[in-house]
Image (cartoon, rainbow, N blue to C red):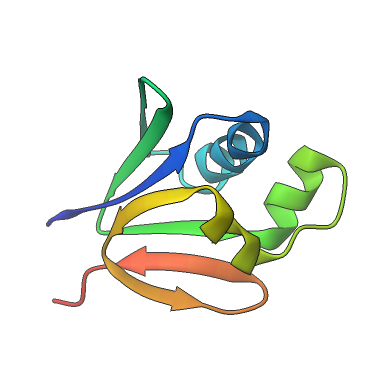
Length: 89
C-alpha cells in the first residue's frame, strides 16, 4: 500500500493541525524539516475539523488548511468536516 502525505509550513497554526492529525491517525509519521512539517501515513490520512478546533481552542474551517499547505499526495476528499487523503486501489 502506498503512503499518502501532507506537508505544511512550520508555524503555530500548523502545529495544532499536526497534533490533531496525530490524534486521529495513530500510525502517522511526522517529519520536521526546515520550514516544513511532513506527515505520512499508509493508505489514508484524515484531518478532522472538530479535532483541530479542540487543539486550537477556536473555530477552524477545513478549507483554511490551504493557507499553510505546501504539497500533498493522494486523492483528496474535502468537505466542511474533514479533509481525507487516500489512494484508490
